[in-house]
Length: 476
Image (tube, rainbow, N blue to C red):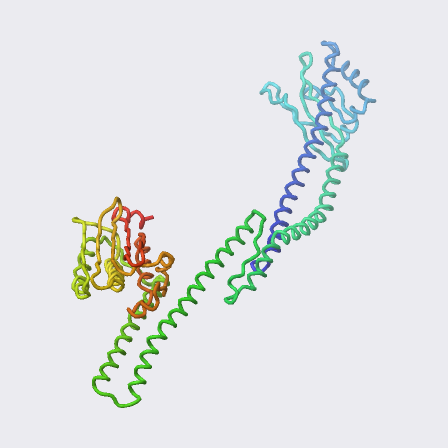
């Protein structure tokens, strides 16, 4: 069953359900028809008993059994209703008995009229007499103080014939209707699933070389349209991710090519002829600097790759952000001072507890402070602050450096993007630090923003939820 197509499976299920419904409908109609036919027959028998009761009531109250026999025989011997009639007074005083009933010796059981009122209820039953079906009614009636037992019947040939004919037509037409239903069901399922075939054919044409293609949009307003829209959205996400990986690979190759080329060129130039010890030291120093820059870049690339694959999981726990900032400031104070820059810090007293990874927090601070120091000329200033603002902890790094143009501010968090490529290459930047900073902030359910003007410096603001809010976010 599982190897069959969806259309064929739908047709088979439709056929099975339709066959069950047809069987239930046919059975129900047969039962209703039978009930109606017998109800008509029972009404006729009831009318015959009522006619007999009225006839007996019309006789004299003190009429003898013999007189009743004479009157009933005279009235019913030539009547069609008397062909299957017998009337007696219990225990066995016969008033009238048709010849057909005498031949069959057909008598109902004798009931005690003093027992209860159940003997007054009519009893209907089916019998086969001389190979013919009959419907009989047995009922006791009280007339002028006497208890009479009446039994009358009618042939049920027409009922049996009608029911047999109905069964024959059901058996005859049911397979034809079932076959027609299966053909229609297969056609309907094919029409319903034709958009799926179209989606399948279109999806097979999409590969890594043409991810920009999309499935033909449907306008059916049903599940297939939602499927088509969902697949197109998925293709858009795949294309974005694929282009991101392609761009990342291309940028990484480009960024690694430059330092490796410099290292190779420096070594080749030095080895072309004998050099003095000072020249060798100079060359080795340049090679070492490029190697360190390359190592740093590779570590950042690995960090981003682990983050993309979900392997760079952070250990979230309560962290005192103020203490983390204070330790980072102590580590940077001497370096910033050696660059002839003014360094100030404002850390709110008390505990600013957030749910986060302490190592990642320090890395975030190092990235922001490193950028501030790199792009701030001598005699400039770097300001670090952290404070509580509502239910958030606000971390801010402000410098008086070269600033960032407005058109570059929206892209500085992209990987390998550098506003001033020549300046960044000179300072050893690869355009990966802020991308890592953005990832860290998002992992902590926070936000990061930049405000900057060329020549007036930059201000990076990070907002992180304080511990109660952070716990709620993580729990959700």
